[in-house]
Structure formats: C-alpha cells, structure tokens
Image (cartoon, rainbow, N blue to C red; front, side):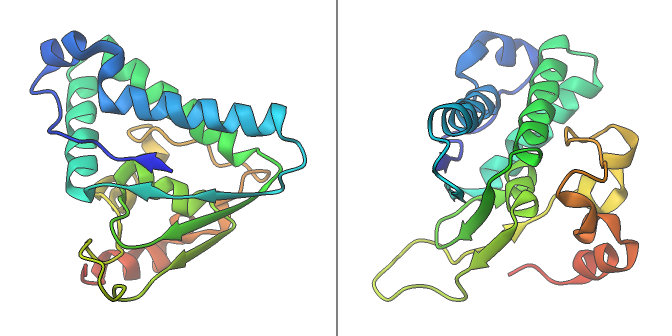
Length: 187
C-alpha cells in the first residue's frame, strides 16, 4: 500500500530542497520503485500485484501541483523527482505481472497516483462506503494534465506511449473517451 502525503507540500523550491529525500513526492516514488524491484527480482512466483493507496487525494494533487510548478520554474531537484516518477511508471508498465488496482474508501488515487490505476490490468472500485467505516468514499481523481494532453507534450512524468506498454488502449489514447471523462462530474 502506498501512503499519500501526511501534510501540505513544500511552499517553494527552497523548502523542497530543505525537505530533501523526506519530501513526499520523492519518498513515495522511492517506496514504489523499491517495491517493484523487490517483487520483480526476489519474488518471481508472485504473479498478481495489488496496487492500493491510502490518504487524502487533495494533498496528492497539491504535491503534484507544487512539484510541477517548481519544475516549470527551472528547479533541477523538482525536475529530477518528476523524471524519477517517469522511470518508476515505465518500470511498472513493462513489468510482466498482472496488476490489479483496488480503489476503496480512503484511497488517494489522484493525480500522479491515478496513473497506478490507469496502468493496472484491472481496477476495482467500491461504490459507496462500508458500514461503520468513516473514511471518505472511493474516488479516482484525475488532474488537469490528463485532459490537456500534457503527457504528449512532456509536461507529465509518465512513460512514453509505445505498443508494448499497457496504457495506450486506455482512455488516455482516445480523445473521445478522455473528453467524456473530463465532462463527468466528480463524486
């Protein structure tokens, strides 16, 4: 399970540098990369991977926005973190395992982490909540770059679309389906 951020993003590039390896954007990418490598290399008999997240989707989007703004302003550290996310997504895309995303109450599949659900072979989302569970209902929250075509223009740290990757057949490759998803109300 990949945990979402526990606090607000760094206010600027100086705060991002001060946080260093402890900033959520880098720590989450490293945790996911470590898990992928551990499972690929040391657990070859595990054929199905479950992808789960837990946290606040608004915080994930805030961290993604702060990172994108810092990278756009020319900050080398933010650009390197985004490049690292791209490598992690590419590693996930070329993994020869069945990927299943479980989107349940309290999950934070938003922005960058929504890419995990889109990269999965199957995604299952619980509609509504569970009795006695006070966590927010399950949501898949896409950020603006998915709809502006930013991935095609290098503004989003995703793996390049190639026939061997999993993502080309998803909504991101079909303008009509992407448009319908953008018009659909959240929640």
